[in-house]
Image 1 (cartoon, rainbow, N blue to C red):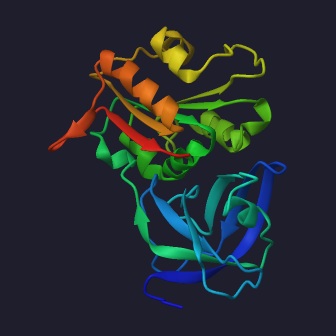
Image 2 (image 1 turned 30 degrees about the vertical axis):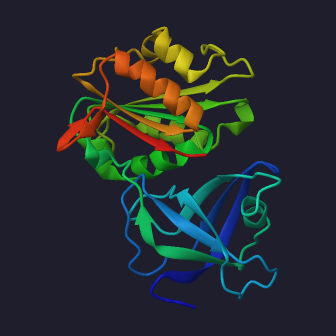
Image 3 (image 1 turned 135 degrees about the vertical axis):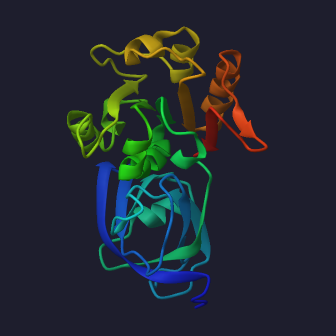
Length: 261
């Protein structure tokens, strides 16, 4: 094993949100493993059943835990025909998993100027990156308001909702100074007070601003998008018309985008 490139870690806990479809996994944290909320790591598994054989399959996952929290936690969808996620779902506490020492990604809160409102818009497991940021006290101190939008198909896919609602209850305090708004939006099941629409439709027709009670003013708002490529492409085009753009050449901009698929 090449210790300089990756380390062997242990699975500590596996939690199923939707059996056979959505799960979270907690693993031991390597020594000196540093990252910013919103970044991701590569997880490695072996094609063989034996847990101590070298990793041959690698996939990228955002951390769910905050930068100073242990253990590491990851949130995953299970693709039945996939090469990696069914193996990940089959792991049990005590099994081996490998973690690349290098972290990746630029979807971090510090890419924006502090102040104003930070929108965190996600579909599916794209939520992971935002959970890591919200588990970091620095994020709460950097903005006046944080709005988390999570688009899913069905209500049972609203993972981590209990933890998120606790943040909502505790927001505006000394520990979590920013005001916090959480909007869960299932598209295939009715939910009180929420239209059954795609997030992009709600951005375009202005309904998302009304639901959040916050106008999308490009001078006061920063927006992060994390999710499937179709949502990102459509949302980015709509937001461009509203005055939002990714930063260029030293300009932090007011829009950040990352595929999570």
